Length: 367
Image (cartoon, helix red, strand yellow):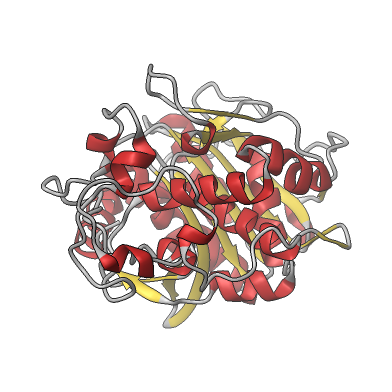
């Protein structure tokens, strides 16, 4: 999500969004169904808003080629928009890609709450007993803390957005032992000084939870996050055909369950009045700690500003390649979820335009 690329992409896809203002209004809204999954639903009409833009957007999406698979919007703890496009259905599981990182952040908070991990300022070597660095031995590696992994500032030569980086994700994925290879990377910065987007840091977080708790990340997640949220239609996998360690796998979830993650974050760690992760952790993890390519970044959560009618609304955001997004707007008591199949394409930024030009204006302007 390099900021220059992000801005250019928004300009490009404005050509697509511009079409939202034209065409026949063939879209028919339906109130989201009660599926007995813990979600309450309500009719869009309950919001006292002008729904014209919403209708035009879905009319356009239904009649023009695009790669958006689903759009959900939660307001006041209730799903009020739930649409599936391009042949998708409500129980379809989506590859979250890097949106899994933000869920790993929640899991780390739970591990701290449960006493498996003491503090984010602890060195990773306190919990990561195996493997240990065997190449490029550097005393600075002893200074790498959990917080450095969370803020992508480990100092290791790991930058997914630099093809020359030895720790670039595509290069690491071809190696036999991802963890050993990553820990063997040379240091290029003092820990905590420079943040570069590094997927392997998030995988090390998962492995730390694994070794500290004695539970693989999937079992830990099921016990301490998914059970409280009534999430069961989910699995961990990876697109690689190689055998992948559990800590290296990504989540595949339904759009409704992605929205639960957003709502948990919006409600300061609570789901249906149950404190799943501490309020303190949610506040700490979603507050900006650094910048990556000019965009505020917390503990594996982006803070993305949206300008609507000269007012700025900041979203606590989980993002994933292809168009997987969980937007959390505390100021608006609102969560929006998008899924898509625009992998490695600028089209995966289309939801940003939909938020800026359609959904945020709709829900911030009363009749």
